[in-house]
Length: 117
Ligand SMILES: [Zn+2]
Picture 1: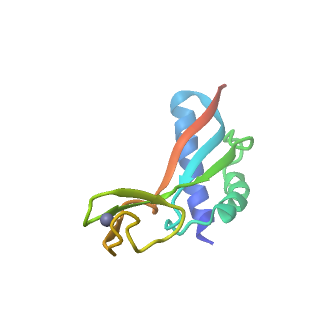
Picture 2: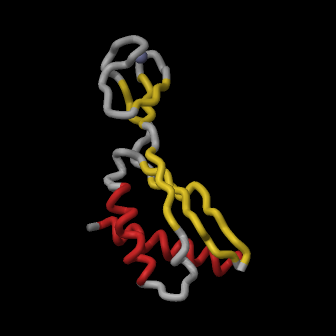
């Protein structure tokens, strides 16, 4: 389950952030692309055991807020950009099969809710 490794490195990132800024992170907002290979449910499931590896870190009360990113495509032919929930081949504007995937593989820590310690 590689989500545990991802959750662990996310925990490390947040712990570093908490130390540098003297705050406690209470929620981490993530954006995950459908092509990132990360299962949001598995990541949520892995979060608790990942945090348990860092006792006293202050992350115990932090929860994850995961949002799936839309997939952005651009058309090589007509240059238009589109957002899809899933994979599409044809350009909705000109009908050609010249779509190029611009995004959908991201794993982004968008923001964190913090409290002063
Ligand atoms: Zn097009």
